[in-house]
Structure formats: C-alpha cells, structure tokens
Length: 115
Image (cartoon, rainbow, N blue to C red; front, side, top):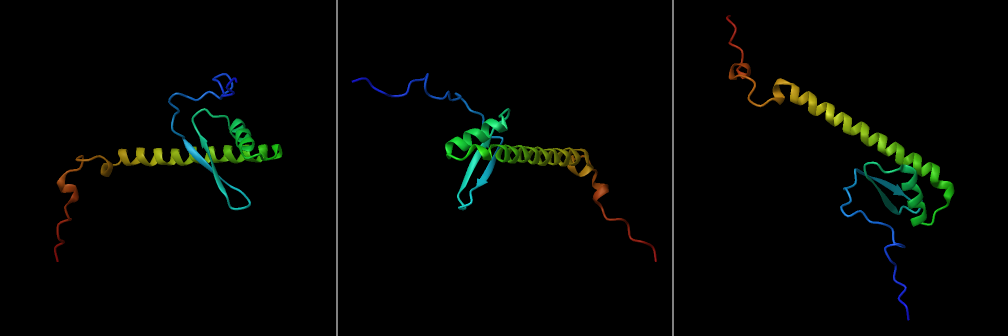
C-alpha cells in the first residue's frame, strides 16, 4: 500500500526562519471566542484575511471588513510606533535625556534672596 503522506509539493512552504510578528490583530467572534492574526513586515492584509476566513470556515462576505480591520490595525500600530520614535528622539535631544551633559551648578538651588 502506498503512503498518502503529504509531500513538499502539496504542503505549504514554511519559512526557514520566519520573522517574529510585527503585530498581532485580535479577532473576537460573536460567541466571545478570541483568535489572532499575526502580521509580519510585507504581509498582504487581503491574503491574511482570506487565510483566516478559510481556517475558520467563515463566509467570503467577511473578507472586505476583515481586510479593513487588519489595515486599520496596521495603521494604528504604525502611528503608535511613530509617536514612540518621536518621544525617544525628543528625549535624546533634551538636556535631561543626555547623561552627564549638565553641570552640577545647573542642579543646585538658587542662592537665598537678601531680606
């Protein structure tokens, strides 16, 4: 009897060293079950949505709204990352952000006022 095990030709290709997800989109079903979609750099939101719908046997009619949710999540993630970059850049540029750049005189209390 011939073995019916999948071969490399019939199995989806796996990346040898898949990059860690850039972000994870949480999907909550009507029955409060939660699933996740891992998004990596360069992923196509439409393809992610189609794979998710196939995996959970959901109607194709959900593809557009799921794709839009993934796109919105990616945009929000990028917005948050930009905010963090801006804050880090501002902190590095401020005198308090540069270690050892201020003199001890700058931290001393002002001299007492004459009566």
